[in-house]
Image (cartoon, rainbow, N blue to C red; front, side, top):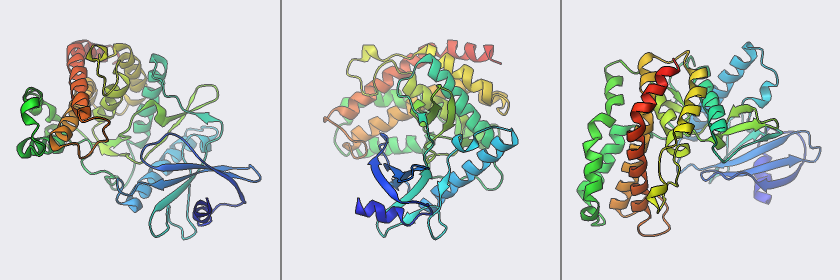
Length: 360
């Protein structure tokens, strides 16, 4: 704890620290809740995982631009309690938005009081999530200046992910290719269609916008009455295609089973979650989206599930070098579950497209 006290002393906060405790369930950054003796304000202290987010200066600069722009939009709209509806960064004593202790990078934010998150995804909270993430994109659609920096380059770039997959197949480092040939063929036969967004972008038909890139229901804060306060966890916010954010939520929240389910009969696509999220999303996002972007929203569910299938399968073929596993066949099971989910999304695709039309 002495180290944490020393880190905190390098940020511009007033008051004496009384308590520092682990906070939240994030898997990337180490997070702590900081309480002062006078209880006036609480803070969040995070050790940034600079192995994943290699350019911390750019990362923090992105978040500052995002939160400043959202704050301006909220003030212009006459919103009340603005400080609880966006994150507030605390600068270090040297004015930077982070502190480097010689080994690790740290940041501080004001803790949004009387707020909570939810883990379970119900149709009700899928609707709220759709509203929140759609509004997040809408508020940032006119962010001035240069595009945000890529905190994880090529994160949702399907052409890049497909090349990684093909490199794994060609190398066959763990000598596992023979046992997964059928899955490899399933990936390949969809490859051209799944890269259509990048092609449409090059043709000038599909724009890139600011995405959250981790659209989970637990990346939203709610007040005590269950109303959405704001979107949090902005580390991956960067430019991309809106259907990627849409599809990322569908891939996780719309799965009736687990990401690594051993019982594939449990893995299907939940159309109620799709309809609820879509309704909420279009209520807030429709005003800035092009007709093509709206048309491609259901495709995003196929795309992100396919992308994750290719990543799990590539890691299995490579010998499990990226994802943590709890058994030698873990990545293979993940791949099979993702493929089952993809097949279910494909079976529901016509209905998904029809539902989009009813919301216009």
